[in-house]
Image (cartoon, rainbow, N blue to C red; front, side, top):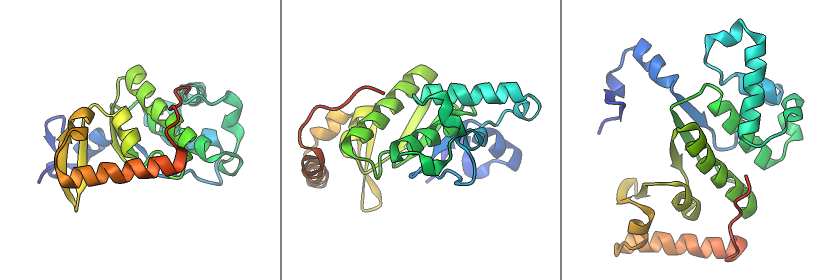
Length: 204
């Protein structure tokens, strides 16, 4: 296979071309991957790829506050350390760092992993809002089928290390493939155990 982004064959790119491509991509790690010894503001600053940041402290500080606003966190959170944050807040700070460089693409690795159903819904809603507000293309890797169907325009289902089905959520749900049906039934059972059939939250 091959990895093609914006018409570019990634494995064939030179170092400078790779750097330019990477500057367009923000990455949200599974558990936030925040540096414990750094404040929230310092963690977010790591995501600012614009060289202006190194010469303009005001720009950098304002960008940090803007990113906190975009993930619905108060400005005073910027001075806190990761140990002072809840699991959901850590996830949002991780997202704030990923968008700090104004990326074209956002890659999410299990963005709702380890969260209760309510906070998982908040993160799903945030992914949707950032997609619409910032115009970014989001690629979400997740075991949460229900959440994935909510945020995705197009879904690819992996089965035994291969893509088993691709399409819109309704197309996947209507699939007659036994493997797809088994996967969906298992996820439904897990959702019922975790949170029942209650309404999904939308406040983000």
